[in-house]
Amino acid sequence: MRWKDGGIVIGSKNFGENKQIVSILTKDHGLYSGMLHGSARKIGHFFCGTFVFAAWSARLEEQLGVWTIDGLDNTHIVRALDHRLSLQTVTTSCFLVKELLPERNQCESVFVCLSRLVIYASNATAMNRNEAVKRLIIGYARLENSILYELGYPNPAVTKFLLECDAHSNPNVIKSTLLLLNKTNSLFERHWPNKFSLQNARKSFIETIGKEAAKI
Image (tube, rainbow, N blue to C red; front, side, top):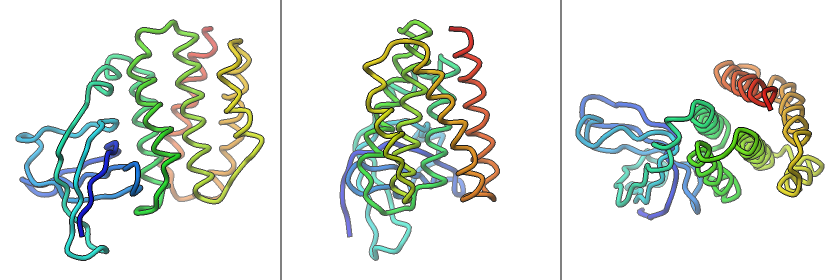
């Protein structure tokens, strides 16, 4: 079978000298992993947050499959590399998707949230601190909420709050979102107690963005 779709790279690792295993969150097919032929030195390293248009193919659907990259846009993530908070936001978000989202399940809402967050991260350097922190923390919270919804943990009150965030400009929105993320710690610890790396990455991100929020 074979299909093509737009997506966002959320992880890659070398597999021998001339192959990489690349995980991509696609718009219409969900999260897929596949083999990409060519060493990182020859074809480049796929940063988390890189937008791609790719073809996935395999003889049988249950196989790992092979990627063919038809188009690549890393301008957003390259801009985010120069902004520490933006880079941490993108890497934490991609790690969250890779660790929690089941593969091969369509989840367009998660794709939309991650796409917007990568774009927010790329534009953060052009914003004042207040606006940058607000967009990053709310964007991350929306992504996390979308993933939890896909996993069967919907929270209508949180969804309503996040939908209304853009209508508010005062610092209390940032503080309220930060409080919301801290309250969700118990859910992660209860349902994914063995994913220590994920919990540590998430807590580190919340701590970092909390310090930035305190400067506003």
